[in-house]
Amino acid sequence: MPFSKNHPARPAALLLGLLAAGPALAASPAACATIADNTERLACYDESVGRPHQEAPPPVAPVPLAREPSALSKRWELDAEDKRGTFLITPYKPTYMLLGRWSNSANRMPTSPNPANTLSDPVDVDPAEAKYQISFKTKLWEGLIGRHGDLWLGYTQQSNWQVYNKSFSSPFRETDYEPELMAVFRTNLDAGLGFKVKMLSVGLNHQSNGRGQPLSRSWNRLMLQGGIERGDFALMLRSWKRFEETASKDDNPDISRYLGYGDLQATWRLDAHELSLNLRPGFSSRGSAQVDWTFPIHRNLKGYLQFFTGYGETLIDYNHRQSTFGLGVSLVDWL
Image (cartoon, rainbow, N blue to C red):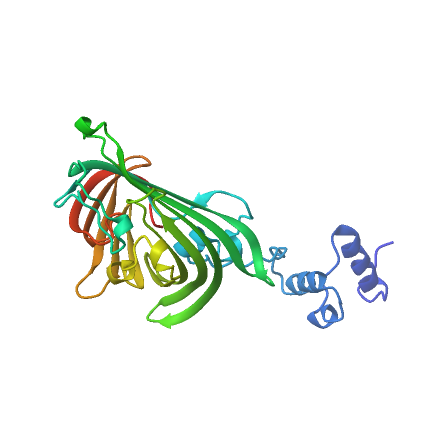
């Protein structure tokens, strides 16, 4: 039956028709405020103002800041991220091979204040020879004091080979053996200007050439070492105290006068190049300086240039002054 304009049921019928024809009318913002769930409440507000609703994206986890790389930590496993465990063979000092090494003053009469360690006749030594060094270390104990400090065993061997001296059957002129036991501690102290005192260590060092009289040379030392770095620059400072020996058994009683009581090793990394400087002060203008430069040749193969001047390039030459120049290849750098 058609409704008249004044029929009281007409508004209700119209509302029922709208409900049947489409979705319910949006709630008011006041009604949305009573919804407890955050997502549903936001959707209600959007609908109440006629804005299409979109689900909020999931929260993005913050990206951790990249750790500034530390060459000393990588070499000595100082930071937790660089720990590799015990009894793994890892690099220590440089490993290299000088195919040619020339001296301006070959030591043909090694001497010592101990008469038992002095030659009576000169030896046939050629100023041109080969030289190589191998050096590695392994961690014996991780966490010496609580979780701090590691105990390392290191070994370095340097050999001078008269490979071009065919008249004298190309002998090894000198081989120096250097085992060390070191307790290394992470410090990470701020030294200002961007420098950090990254590590400190204390250890025992033995160095000898393993030869009989009169060519035997050896000494034992207590070693203290500190490592400082900033970016691609690292500085290692060492000091030592020699353990004295009885006069009759001391191969080289005056060795400290020539090799001093410490040295410093400065290293710069410049892209694929590495430049290092070693200074070892002695007494009365004695001591030594050594410059090393490694440079790329092909892929992982690097060239190696070494210049040394002063006393003590080897133990047999501890009191002999010379300048040497060598060229070869490098397998492991300082850093």
